[in-house]
Length: 320
Image (tube, rainbow, N blue to C red; front, top):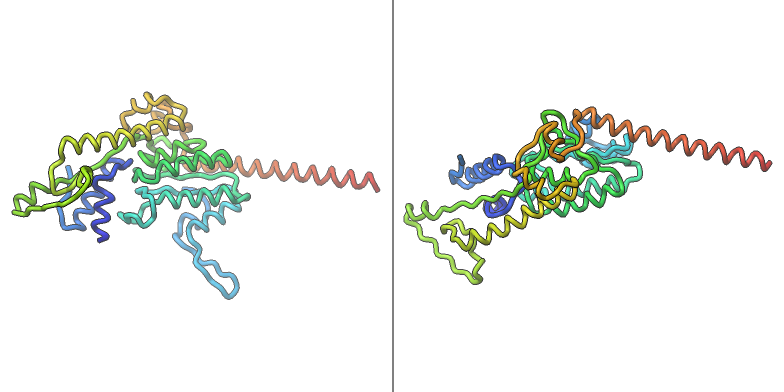
């Protein structure tokens, strides 16, 4: 049953992901099903280097999740780093195509934790992703737009933010990438597998009974009809328009300018020239700059509080 669910997630579903990654996922799923479908660093200590750690509190020892470790580190530095790595899925257990994947709900949860923690003054999304699912992406983007009104949320592309990952980056306060890092791929892709000819060659006839004209659309045991293609095209146009409008609004670009990228990939300075990024800087330099800004803000706040305390003491002494 899990295998069928995997195929459902891959086929006949719009994706905002690089084509090569989708090809690889399809080939992998085919191998699991016995079908040949091959087609033509942030310095926060152990937070990012160890998947889990143990917290020993007296007689009680408990495992600390990577998310909790990152938040604890952020409470000291004032900067919460949220990794956005690998294939993006709506929920953590939705596909499990590979070990390297991130869910939209996990990103949202970590951002919310940072926004609600007064010790966190800035949030950094560190992106290295080819993109992923359409489902859940635009909702997360809207949440990031709302959250950055409360605290700055910076995107550091280390080293890729394509398609759905770029939709996420576009919602951030700023986008920084290095000379070899890339962004873009503002487009939508979907695959359909037609096994009807293979079934016929094997002497297999599949009969499907259904009600509702659209119920059997995109069935893998029948060729696509012109009517089904038209329905799919309308759906793809809708998602593509949503993606284009989202990037245009977030990056203060015209929709025509975003469409003119033709889902191309932009690296380094070319991404900045296209309006898809803001700063050309190494990942370490970017995080150092953001951390230094937070440290300066904290120091200024301490000086202000100290001056207020001194003024209050002088006023009290004058009354004595």
